[in-house]
Length: 488
Image (cartoon, rainbow, N blue to C red; front, top):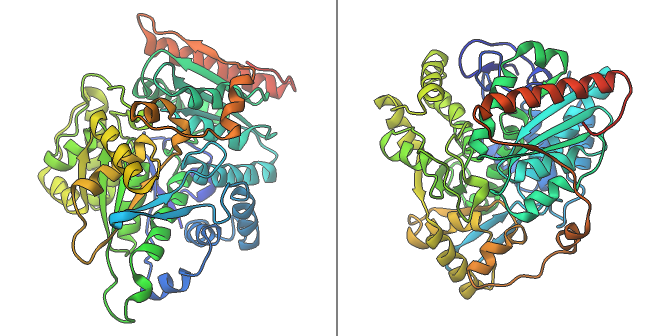
């Protein structure tokens, strides 16, 4: 299994190379050069596996045993997924009216990011230990990714984590999960801007190949292929348990499953598209909030940012630059790196692009999309509680709104992805007129000390942020080389 860039300039990289990187050197994103096919027999043989066992099987398709022997892979995934709050790691809630919710939020930071993040950090630590190396991880976050990266990597000897979050645009719980971590290898920055603003200097830093090589700079955003790879298991697990596969006769066509996905950076929806290309008949629905660029792209081919990122009740998907759509475009264009390179460079320069007609046709055949305003989120949270006494987080409500307004196709089962616990979004719960009992881990955050540095928005804030972050990355690297351990 080898990897290439979505922009055509890089080929033949192995999993370790891709893991220990961010964007590809040509500015693209890494993808497998070929995708394995999942046969009906393989799927049936996986139906009795636990979620950790399924993750291991999926990862083994993309990580050669020469890099991580199977026994080591089993151990890494088992340890990574050992600290979750439910025995099965993930859980299915089957509610009234055919509503099925796949709960992916039982990790330490109460968000789906914990599933792929814990595994990816274990893979990273495995390679760094083998080679006695260090790495600096640079993460821009819209709320959940930063906390998950911090909790997964805190205290690890070979990794420093630099996280940048949009101050005032995430919930207090999300913020405190980051700024209360005082370990020496964690460095948190609060930026006066949106998550899309943060992505601009971060992308430029990853294009600085001298900086990347000198300090082993890498990403734990879903830019990193390993994150998307583990997320393939969400879709396969749901398919095995919700599609009706077990009742289907041997030799009959595989039953379809509709998966409804709250969509921001589009990492999950990219994973769903990959699984579909691997042979599983998924009907994918990408649901956005008022930041509806993915919805507009699917509906009309208008891949263009709005003027500003709208702050909504579902802040983790307050994103106008869904960077993983690059992976989707690459897959659906027949892996046309030159086409994707031209598209994405135009989009990054002008923030606007109209999809070629053939690509838009392919996209609209693979994805359905919708957009939900805050009023719809509140309505959905209230209805789900009234009918089921089941509390949704606002992001999950974005998906469930689709269920309530568009009944499933006859004969096709449906599953909505629950990306976070409502405990992280107390203001949204209160706005819906509902209440919840906070977990002790969330209540304890209020009593903890905090630490972070500010990135203020000045006249040339993008360049200023880039320079400041670069200086801190260089200082961290120099300090570690000298054996000096301190918060930079």
